[in-house]
Amino acid sequence: MNLSDLLTGLKEKGLKLTPQRQQILRVLLAAEQPLSAKELGMLVNRRFPNVGLGTVYRTLDTLKQLGLVNETVFPGGGRRYELCREHRHHLVCLGCGRAVAFPFCPADCLAKIAAANPDFDVRGHSFAVFGYCGKCRKAQA
Amino acid sequence: MNLSDLLTGLKEKGLKLTPQRQQILRVLLAAEQPLSAKELGMLVNRRFPNVGLGTVYRTLDTLKQLGLVNETVFPGGGRRYELCREHRHHLVCLGCGRAVAFPFCPADCLAKIAAANPDFDVRGHSFAVFGYCGKCRKAQA
DNA sequence: TATTAATTGAAAAGAATTCTCATTTAGCAC
DNA sequence: GTGCTAAATGAGAATTCTTTTCAATTAATA
Image (tube, rainbow over all chains, first blue to last red; front, side, top):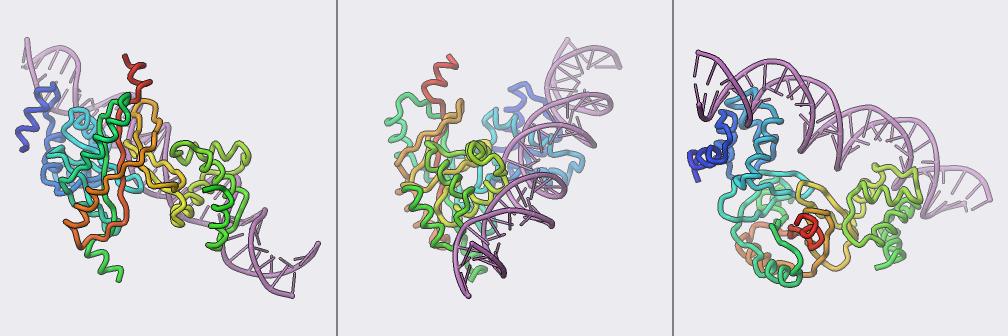
């Protein structure tokens, strides 16, 4: 997924291609891990110092609704955002906050749950693993 | 797990058995699903109108650290709390917010992840399934 | 180029959580 | 039972995160 694909997508939905949105998308494309709204805002501000958090949140909402961006909630309640690439989950370090994506998905579990709850219309799931990365473990010791 | 077990546990850790804590534990014991701090506070206030949210948050922190209470993060960032009974996850309705516990756990997934990341000290995981319950689906239609 | 509806910036408002500090109290020793 | 002390509490202030408001700007279209 590259920038022009994303922009074409936005255009097709009737959304304006503002420079702010383009920059937000560029930052998300370049990010190697999910970003908080604040982090995203600061990165956007490198080129567009006037873009406020309001715009960041609004844009993220829009992108979420289009299914282009995924929101993940980290322990403690922090919300982080990333482009929807392939389906993935994260291994999150409770020390430094860094997250590593992994492709394993508890599919069998989901199947069991769906089977056990036929009335329930499953729309999504969250899965994350927490602990301490090698660096943080050394730092603690 | 009953109230006196919990109280004994607190006492062993050197914590005071204040009436506020006892009431918080009673409410958590009676709860059939994870509660937000606000909900928990309101339920506690039925008998102890003066207990503020500060105390609720502090007590929840303490209980979390003792491993007696589990914090689950819901989509949108809402944090909810429940007593640690057997290990479980939740099926959460995005319409009414009600949560149903289920005992399935993505254990095989966790094993894969641990094997693939030997440097990482895994301490926990979160898993939740979202969608719409039967009632909310009917209400929508 | 003019028009219009969508978008934005800035600031205010709201919600959730944490912190502060003076006061109260549970648990313990006597 | 009384007194002591560290822990816990209440009330409110302070933070942090997110949403909303509204006037001004701007992308897209004719």
